[in-house]
Structures are given as C-alpha cells and as structure tokens.
Length: 152
View 1 (spheres, rainbow, N blue to C red):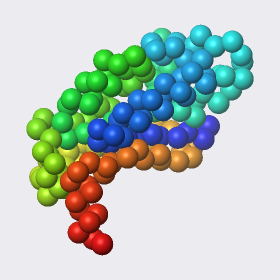
View 2: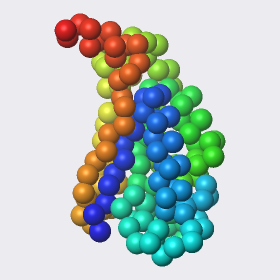
View 3: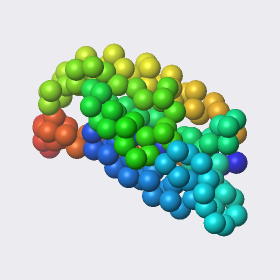
C-alpha cells in the first residue's frame, strides 16, 4: 500500500487538520467512531492510504498532531471526530509560546521535538511503502508572522 502520513501542528494546522479528517472520513464512509458505515466497496478500496485498521475493525487516522499547548489538542480530541486519532499521537507542551517566537523555537518547541520525531518515526515504520508526508500549517500565528517580517 502507498500510505500517507499527515502531520499537523499549531492551532491553525490542527483546526484545518481536524476539518480535513472529517472530509476524508466522509469520503471513505468512516463514522466519528472510526467504523465503516459507507455504501460502496470503492470507499474501502484505498482506505489504507490514510488509515490504519485496528484489531477491532475501527479505522484510526495515520496522523501526528502537535502543539506547544494543550488547548487545541483538547478541542480536537473532544471534537466530533476525536476518536479517529491515536491517543499516543497527540504531542503537546503545557505552556505554549505566548506569541513569543524565540520561546517557541528555542525552548518550548525544542523540548518537544524529540518526542514529535519519535512519534513520526513510529508511524512511518508502520507503513509498508510510504507515499508522502503531508505537513499541516505550523506558522500562521503572530510570532510566525513577526519572524517572517524579520527575514524580509
């Protein structure tokens, strides 16, 4: 199979990613609990591109979600499709960067990077033949905009 690993980060990336997964679930006939309720065998034909199938017949998204603070992660986890995500693939800090780019880059983010890379590695190792890594938005926040202005 040619799997795709979806990596989403930050508030914007996780909010867009949550909506993305709702659409993918709808296209494949996957309900919010991860069970197939579709009406066509075509929906299951390539379902393993985006999902791992758990032993209980549920489909779990092949996604890694990260943020520097837990608020957005909690919203995704408790949202309508929160059950399709593997709990171990939520990686988050506790305090966030407080719109301070340097804090997000050098301290809070630096503390999480090894954990994030480990989770991504484990997901990638579960793929037979990885087709792509899709990266969600990571830098639309105010501190990201300030950093881009500095580079101009």
